[in-house]
Amino acid sequence: MAVPARASNRAYLALRGEIIDWELPPGSILGEVEQASRLGVSRTPVREALARLTADGLVAAQAGRGLVVTDISIDNIRELFEVREALEMQAARLAARRGDSAVFAALEREFVAVPDLLERDDPARHAYYGLVQRFDEAMDDAAANTYLVTALRSLRTHLVRVRRLAKDNPARLSAAASEHLLIVRAVVSGDADLAAHATHVHLHHALASALGSTEPAP
Amino acid sequence: MAVPARASNRAYLALRGEIIDWELPPGSILGEVEQASRLGVSRTPVREALARLTADGLVAAQAGRGLVVTDISIDNIRELFEVREALEMQAARLAARRGDSAVFAALEREFVAVPDLLERDDPARHAYYGLVQRFDEAMDDAAANTYLVTALRSLRTHLVRVRRLAKDNPARLSAAASEHLLIVRAVVSGDADLAAHATHVHLHHALASALGSTEPAP
DNA sequence: GAATTCAACTGTGTATACAGAAAGTTGCTA
DNA sequence: TAGCAACTTTCTGTATACACAGTTGAATTC
Image (cartoon, rainbow over all chains, first blue to last red; front, top):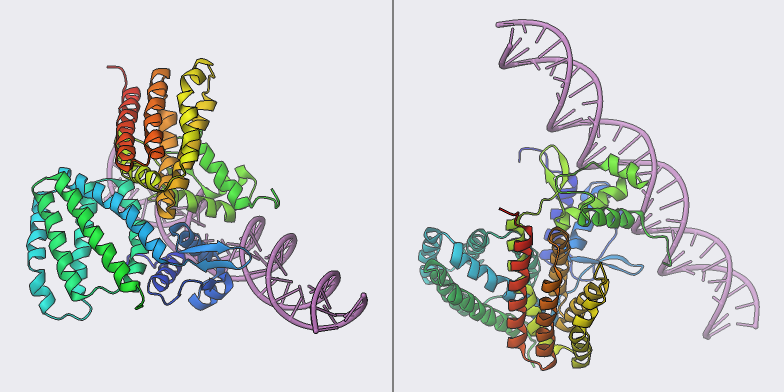
């Protein structure tokens, strides 16, 4: 870092990380003075951090109680996926029209190799999730639409919380990789409709998996 | 208002209004001290207002220059409509599935009457734009998706700026009303595909109109 | 005459102090 | 014992003071 990171930014990243990692579970009350002393900064940067988190939708003002970490329910997951479907299908269309084939051809080779990757038994699946992240970034880049990318980033913040709630199993990861592969191949060949529909299929399965793994045993 | 509106909120609404109304044109530099003295509040609420505007994408930090009102270009309009297409088509689908038919039946009657409305020669077309606003609100309500509505609201902030840039002509308004009418009828009859595709058609024409009226005469 | 350096000023980032409002608690009364 | 009221405490919202960084301008030197 070229400059000492600003205190408000440090406070924002710290609180955001703790909320996403469920260290601050939904319902936690975030008082300004308490967080200021805990994070070792004054109230001013904490205020700014909390304002950004409110804009992100990670915390909300509750009457009289101050700011509270927002809840994530099953209904929230369905709503998130409804928006995600709209935005990612559009991103896939745009990427197929505008994307750099070479970039996605490289990703295609990586997704082909995922079965080998998963056999290596990386407990946290860091390599796989890193690949998915690069896929997302390539799509953002190829879509070349500031407003779309902004909306997707906001959405992903919430999706990360869901991911912590619903653990993926190895079979699902393998299936997801082949779904991603189809999307990537559609982008490489410039087939916008196929890219969009393959994204739809992928999200359908992802939602079913997320809902399935969160439902309690009867 | 039960309580005296908070100074930070007043500052936010004031600055937001001035940016949307082009009183603060793109490129305007917003210094904290200057705005604080102009709005009659201290720097703290102004800071909060500027932070919210930055999150909205209406202002952006420019290296060394402080905060600057963001620009709206032709490319921005295209990008906005790409996102709008994705979100509003999804909203139309959801509204067709979940919407209250009675509400949209009432809107249908209003849109049928728009030609009469436009003959009354209201210079600012307040009645018409009010109807469109009620249409948007009914769609938001029917879509019943917090994240979708949040994204749409953010988008509309930018679209209002475009609307000030590109004036609608009476012929366009009349055509837009019949496009809206088709969407509303599709929602009433619960036809999700038709609602989505009618929205697509509407946005296609709206974009063509916006781009046409902004292009300088050759 | 041009380039480089130094100084001053403007503007943001942070801390803290103060005021007002709201919620919880405690005590009194019916 | 239950309910109401008043008080206390703690919170947020706002203002202001202070420090540091970046930019701009001028002056001096090559």
